[in-house]
Length: 368
Image (cartoon, rainbow, N blue to C red):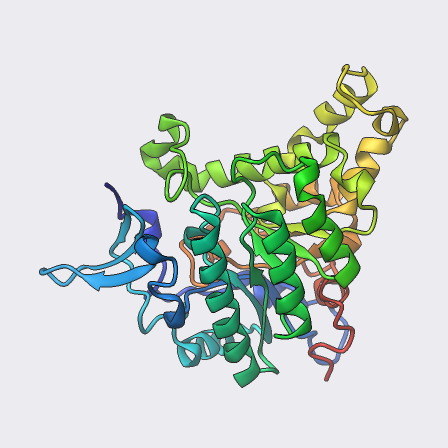
């Protein structure tokens, strides 16, 4: 039975200042600051408890008062979800107000993607999650929106749930993990990508810790909680490489995929990826062999700017389309506060709010 306490146990309770929010729109020009739209904020919904059968999710408290959150045989201990921004809308809104965040797009908690459990339980959980999320954002339409949980282990069901979530529930897209045993470039998943394209909605792809409801990952990442500190970046990097080299972006030219934390190591290794495409390696498609094709593919993707230092942001800006950068916080998470970094990223020269409106297909969102 896997139990975790350190980093993830800091998810709620502490006071987290958002220096980045204050630096987004602090130029010399007079006039009111642009609203801040946060696209990287997770939610835990009480109505979903037990909807995945024996996999939970379940909240509880030990005899010594330590709270826990269970997913299958995995226990996250020391996290007080109840009464935190993750579960209490009033606490979330107060924290948003304090941190200068005008609007948030809520996505599923990565601990409860349930991408590896039997499809029937996953479908039941996702439907309950999306129904509850739709009700939450409907109660606060000027502050919150949502991205749907999807049972991607059954692509047809995932496509159906995405259609229901967007057309019937009013959610703005999907929020999924980066790995569930099926290669992201598998033709089986084309129905999911095609559905997002036909609905004209984005998909937010966020990694999850390995070994929760699926296979255990590299044991080296269990030390020092490297699965969270660097493992998430590794998973994003692998996902992006697979989507590009596997031809997903070529097959779905209008698909919009957004990754957290600047896409992991992509800004640093983009030149190496381009060199592999130009060599070319035998698995490189004809489309990617032309000069600049790899770079153009990377500029198709969207990234949030939650990267912790100015040097990383500068690398990201060299690789990404500046019009595809959006603001994200991992709200109330262990790494939300970027002001503790030696050189917190200065996003004041980027049009992150304008970009978020385009990504979300909401041109009038937060217009004053």
